Image 1 (cartoon, rainbow, N blue to C red):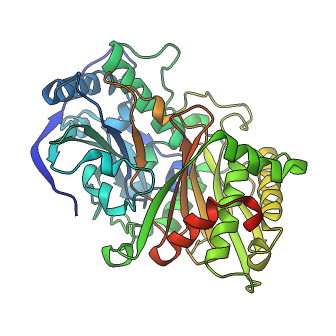
Image 2: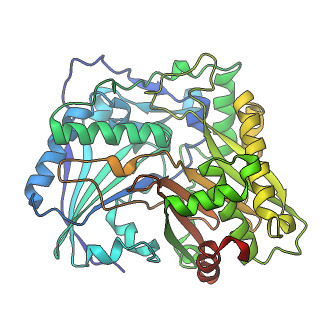
Image 3: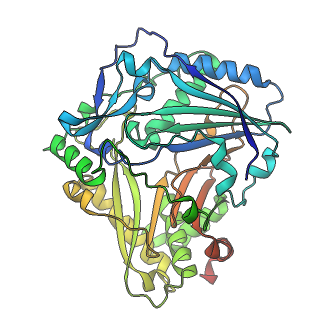
Length: 438
């Protein structure tokens, strides 16, 4: 267990700004409403070399820049709140909601940050104490909380908890990039003014769909049933990160060259085949489900501004047969099924959305779920003391959940895989082995 000690807990106030005054409440779109019952997403940046900036300077620059960026990203300063009369949740951005400011935790650890930042560390418990632990017995709850941990042997971890209703991966990354830019240069990047107006998410019956999502996915509001596994269940899981270089990715794409698979699909197919194999599904003819998000911003009619920060991704599913995925041509089958699902989603990104809550997905041995994107540039986030040496998503701890981000070096991709511990060693050996062995 990590030796992390909290030094101080303070609040970062929201500064007044000429930016348009926020609404008192942001009504969640139906795409936001899918995540009301989710625990906070927990992001961690590890900086192993901060020799040119001492800890008080880092704390001061992070706090002052956070104060300056929040008026532009006011939903992040709000509270997720339940409105009984509307039977749904909103993000409350009223003066009373944001007056408390953002929880900012300062901590220290006697561990070696380099041991935590290694590629192949069973990292599940190594990271959970480096981020704010925001529990949600019931609404309201804060949208954002921050923790900065100083390692006594050198290095700093920046942990950020963000509730998923405020945005998808692209929207949250937009906030991180803007905050880092102000921290580093004193100003936001050109052309980065965010769009928070949920009215751009227009769909026939969208308001009723949002309410239906809340009723089916979060039926006990304002009480919250978090989706995290209990500590007892989580003790049987492990997560490992694999860094894929350009040559490896190219070789995998070549295996499905007649399908022209994207980087995301070729990596996902490799993961799916390996998971099915190590789970011993070669003789299982049951259905095998692969789920992944598809960004709808450019697919919407009309297209939605790329700076839109709210959730704008639709769940996409590819359905296969378990034994065929684990079979000799499983990679080609997985590539084809995922590509077909993407093509359908491109044509009709919201097809069947009214029935999404009815898909009560159970994480079984025949399910693999992907999150993130090979295009998410979390490693480009520079707060002023260099780009991070390691980026991690500390949540989404379920068997068969895989998180992808663009790697630190050009052409690389990081793949974080969570599995039951008894499967991880076999997965690692098979996943990185020459292709002909799968």
